[in-house]
Amino acid sequence: MKNIILACAAGMSTSLLVTKMKKAAEAKNIDVKIEAYPVQEAKKIITSEKVDCVLLGPQVRFMLNQFKEEFPNENISVIDMRDYGLMNGENVLNTALKAMGE
Image (cartoon, rainbow, N blue to C red; front, top):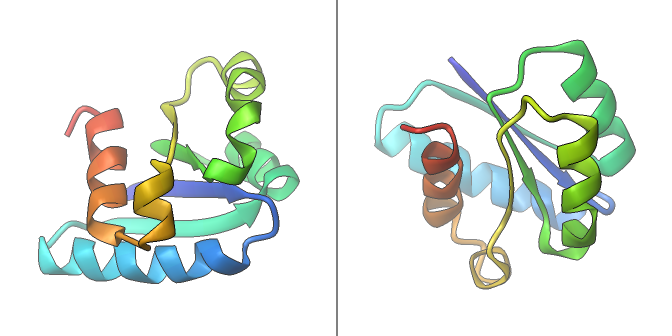
């Protein structure tokens, strides 16, 4: 099972995106755990468990370099602003899969 973390400002709208990503994964028969957390909580999760991919919400994209410095061994990307705005779970899932080399 792959573990994907979405890091965002507060986690409200990103939770809806998680639901859509899970539906897209289910449709593709992909075994994945996807959760959204505010940035500080996401950092704790990344430190405490195996994470296969970290996706930053567009509203916290300015933290990309900080995340990459703090977690140099993690797959970290920023969610496309358009996909985020449209809540396109399939495209965001594909972004995560691509980041993981899937």
